[in-house]
Length: 324
Image 1 (cartoon, rainbow, N blue to C red):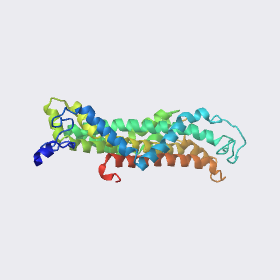
Image 2 (image 1 turned 45 degrees about the horizontal axis):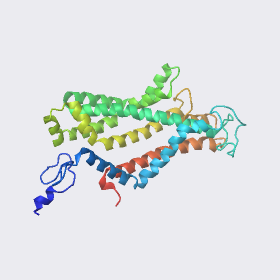
Image 3 (image 1 turned 180 degrees about the horizontal axis):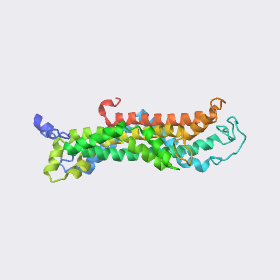
């Protein structure tokens, strides 16, 4: 068999935009056989991803720790020994079997406070990541695909949002609002943290729109929105997932900073609120370490687990980073 015949029977997938000479395209029929089909090819890619995912120690460790905290946030409040803000015991009690993390200055059970705080912190983090992701992806895709004067306008708007001091803006808005919720905080974080996503997506969209598979999509009669959603976005799926994880972690950290300054939700309790109360009522000066260390440690572990999982996912998606 000649070299050309051997290349024709090869089953290696073709990268977008690569020449098709001598290489069988995904889903094409092998010599003497039936077509593989898109479903079979996508199934192979799915199993390949799972194969490397379950063997990546960073991804397994990060997701494992994060799942534990998510479950604690979802079902933990139903099993909390005491209501979060109820005075249940004398103040300043050290950790014990009855009060795992002791009691606060007000006689509140710190362990119960922590379980309720996890839910609100995750809620704000998810809302912030969702709104920032939607806005950033929308502006990035439009700017990168259309280009021209519309790209200039959107880029100028992006730079303006980057320059706005979000903390000062939150203080001004809070002065006019009698109360605000976790939903408000999540939305505020989302509409002020999307610019870096928009700029990165714009750059990748601008690069991908010049590939051969996009030209073929144009020739087939597809319109711009369909090409972006069905051809360009799937090629950026791994990056979009990694960006959402980073947005999730950064949103929770920003929320903790706002809550610690007393700018968080006026109802409910969060990890930042616990740190704020411990600081206001001299928890550090009184050496009540069980009051402020658990929320600080919980937030650190939650965000660190997200970052470790993000690094693991990057190694799974990028063959050059995989450990042999």
